[in-house]
Image (cartoon, rainbow, N blue to C red; front, side):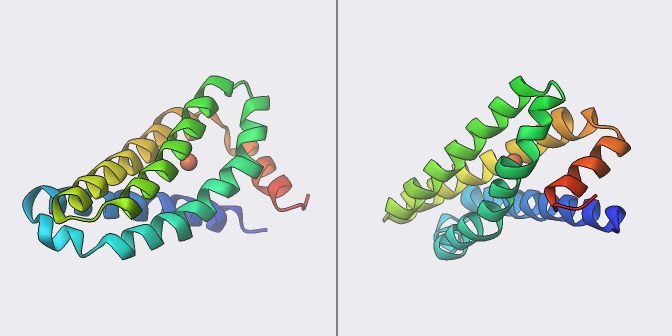
Length: 142
Ligand SMILES: [Fe+2]
């Protein structure tokens, strides 16, 4: 089992989300019309790769993090997930340029905030051994 590669993949997801979030926030503020054209791709990103990542965390990582005493941090992370899912609905329902750009800005800001939160308060709390055990068990292997 190549744990280093798995960790790299996990953090690559986070980095991808952060980069996209920064770019979208900038676009929403500086060129709302161009930003509004990203509506479908942003929705597809949130409901595709991001949703998959959230489910992985919720089903496999969070229950184990709670066992490591990170219950309060996990609660915050779960709330972020729920809020981003709601932001996606708000974006889907937004119709005019201003509304779409604003919905994209809120969703992007939350994505950035959330990935920073997990990176600062959850991931560093685990030792390398804990990570390995956690990744191994989440894959159903030893
Ligand atoms: Fe998360």
